[in-house]
Length: 160
Image 1 (cartoon, rainbow, N blue to C red):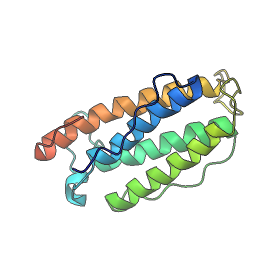
Image 2: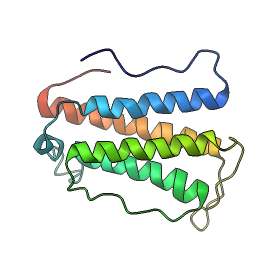
Image 3: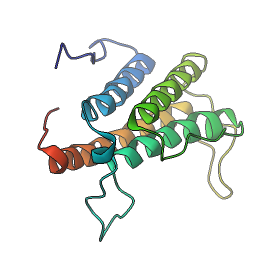
Image 4: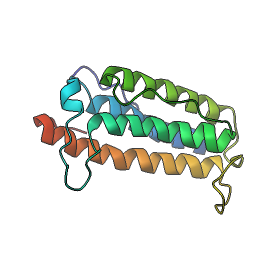
């Protein structure tokens, strides 16, 4: 692999830059975990007994839905467009994920961390953009752990 494209946030960054920077680190790691992977390998279901849908392609698809759901649907309160089919090639799923992350980045750049989302499911309180950023960092990082395991089980590739 060439030079690592990820950049950690500046040590003295303000809160928004710090949260955004760590989320971008996680987002960029998704693509690194999928590097040089065939479509067939990306669709392998290695946990058929306990998590039959779980595959590398499904995780990329799911993370796209996470970005779309939290930043567009919940925070902006806008209807969400349909995402590409899970049957799309991994390269398309990754490009769609990257594009959705860019939309999310712009939403964060345009709003204050204390601003509340415009929509929440019935019975749940509205949460701030700060809360959403923290949650999406957590969700992305948790699924990177799954990607780590699935990639290693697929072809032995390991790495941070």
